[in-house]
Length: 608
Image (cartoon, rainbow, N blue to C red; front, side, top):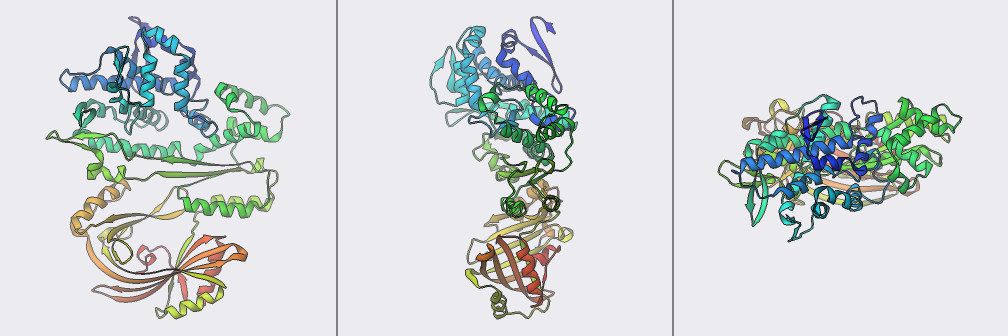
């Protein structure tokens, strides 16, 4: 549809987007047309999500629209002072439009199958098509775009384009809250989940300022809460959709198929999504090998029965899971299995988000306590294992039963705690327990004092303790029982060092509770409850014959408060190497000495 020599594109969220004459010609180039054949959500379009059909081209046009919108907002908010000329604006818009040219078919689903990143391929695409692109604009625009992508400190001009100046606007496209993320989060969330977001309000409060002699993009403090919500929503979107186990299934099967077919990287570069889908379609009604027919049935018909997949965030739990998996598989070789890993960094350490408060003072977002709970989040690892039982002829029926039990297991623990029913055990009794092992070595001894706080009505959901130890700095520890998304139970724990007052505790703990969906604490809810003096003796028990090692800790604690004075003996067993059966065997052995496993109650779990 053409109006006034402009092309109008109907975006599912932003509505009408007018494309200027030059960019209309750019979109007619084959390298850009290919983007219309690549799905934005990769193999997730094969996962039964009906609306997950939008393309990389639509995403790229939406990103260019947001960059253009952000530049207009800056121009309006800085009282008509705008440092960019017309060509420099065109460079930023072209960089936004072409930022995904290097994606292969099925986009991110093909990562780890190539020696180059999609960013490196994007640069190659611009180099190969530079003559046609430069002819459209009438000057060497591609050189400026490449400098922008490569982030090279170039203190010169290229055809009236100041490179140092456009690099100051780089965070519009490559940053923690850039227009690229803003577009795919908004569009994907709307089309897949039906959820509308209002992140564009962030851009309406965007301006520029000079800091340390450099031009910086600055956001008004009015939108700080929206920026925090966007960072949090990004985590939620990745956790619930992009990196969910169910949606990873199709991706892992496609990768396994490419591995079986020995499709080269050069062939993947030339491959379109419909090429692969058409080839899989031929397998459904042909006399091909059963394994290829099964792949086609899973991807095209959704027949995922006996396709086992699990997602594990905790790296130690993942290593433990792989050991158990190896025990079950034994020497079986012909297994249709894929193991993959993804990482999510919610906010980069050296992020480029600057906030201007009411007094005109500009700070990095890391300096705001309200944002710390999200900006300080570590890189999250997502580990996946997929096995198609119907496509694994070497597996016996017994192995299949064990695999189903392993993948469907609701709880897997590699650490257990045991408490004595009589409270009269001594360290000498502990040495008697060790007689069942021939090999053991002392690991560590330490003493520490902990103060546990009573948290009113929230005492069943979280625990706070102040730890004063000879072995480490004084700190306050927040513990929350949680499910990590893979049905493997663990405890969320966060340490805050050198906190002396209740007010400081609230400043640090409440943002985390809000992030976790728990009720905030009030000042009067925090009361000192129990003081625990601990002596911990740790021993590593080894059984080299069975390739097993357990770290067994003897914890001698005295709990003191106004109501009760208790002496507790806790044994903590952590599996370092081997099968979890070793923990069960240890538990049976400890029963003879009057120990039972501590479960459920968080305070009891901590040995109080």
